[in-house]
Length: 292
Length: 254
Ligand SMILES: Nc1ncnc2c1ncn2[C@@H]1O[C@H](COP(=O)(O)OP(=O)(O)O)[C@@H](O)[C@H]1O
Ligand SMILES: [Mg+2]
Image (cartoon, rainbow over all chains, first blue to last red; front, side, top):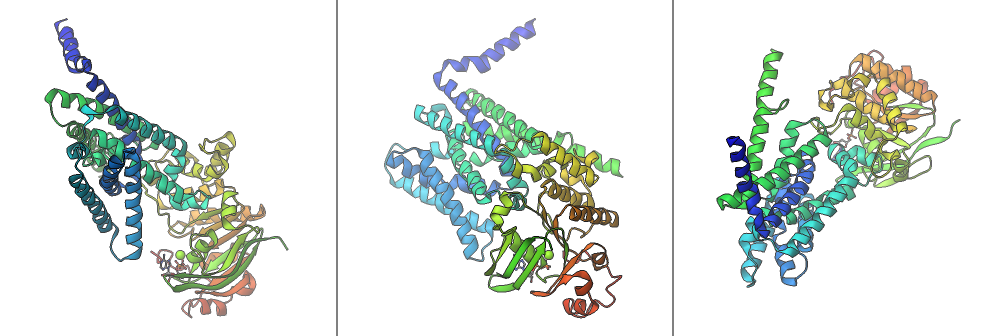
């Protein structure tokens, strides 16, 4: 009896009381949505091997965000232009020079990011660099919420419609081409979604950590399933869970929201890495014993 | 004489300015199995890629049933099995999913399988003997089974033109025999099959025609006329010797 009472009170204190603040309601809802969208996309990123690309695009959007801010147009548009632009630049340099791809990626995204830093520092305005770099979901504005919702809807609808084609594109793009699918279109679709979700993720965890949102849930789910559909559902559940819990934790400990979310995601990954039924370290070592 | 199915006209392909295939012209009729024979680096895979439009010829033109290749692909008229599957074997798809990918061209935008698609996939899997393995993750298959799975996907496409690049490389004799039997069935159904292979001994048993290739078409026509010791030594630079019993090392292209 006492225990139940204690439990209920604890639950109310941890999860219900914070909701008296309007900003917490908004923060939890936005985090959940961003967690959902980023983790849905993260399955494609991990399977396509685009983690580095995700990191590049999310950093390269910075100048776009600043320019859009100055021009007073939606940040997503600026981010989109620079996100896709950075990838086109990467492809161009790779094709025209003898430099290896990972070097080109590292070179391009830091260049764009540095340009963004210069722009932020020179444009005297209310734009707050720390919010862009580290996120500010506890102080998110209504217009940012609307933008996040629009991006989320676009991304989820696109993924729902093109799901099978994108899976095929990630798995076997030669076959995709040979049955007449437009792989260039699929490539740029995936890339555009990456740029858009980078902006959505920017609101909650910031530019620096957004790549974690776009990689970690997919990687964790990949260790837990051999079926793409299950993997997606697991990733989305993990993404929403860690976003919501991370936001609460950051409220209670008064710490960085992005940091809390990503630390939580990483802990979940480590747990899966060790204990996953088939692909975890323990299961794998048992496998070897059996085989001996 | 059947209708012309694959029409390759004076095709020249170059990589970075270096010519890999020079002025190739071939006309294949319906209901023909044609073997493509040549050394490593002779341009066999290049010819397949040129037919599929994956490399753009410097000169020349390819059509299938009189249509440009993009149209052919969109109408599910051609199925292509590349030399080595450049796929991620740990990808979370099972054998059934992979074969179902051969049906996407017939489905609506959402690629929801209809009962006909499920039926064709089942038949294709049964024909290659992998129906019982259908729920296995693709990487859990053996080498020969992987080849059979991708062959089943090509079957599921129900395309009347089949392009097979070294389908017997690295497979066991049993699988090779099973695939040859199936190809002969498909020929009966009017399929046109272009197949490159290192196994010279089996060519005479199932190929109606042969193309001998070394950076250009050296000889091409009915197997009985073209597949002569003299032509083969020209193709392989005199290194074949007694070709009739020789099975060239099928892994040497890796
Ligand atoms: N992507 C490519 N880039 C540059 N050269 C290539 C490429 N693909 C093939 N080649 C060259 O073209 C020639 C023919 O290759 P290929 O068609 O693969 O021969 P085969 O399939 O008969 O072994 C070889 O000399 C090969 O090195
Ligand atoms: Mg080859």
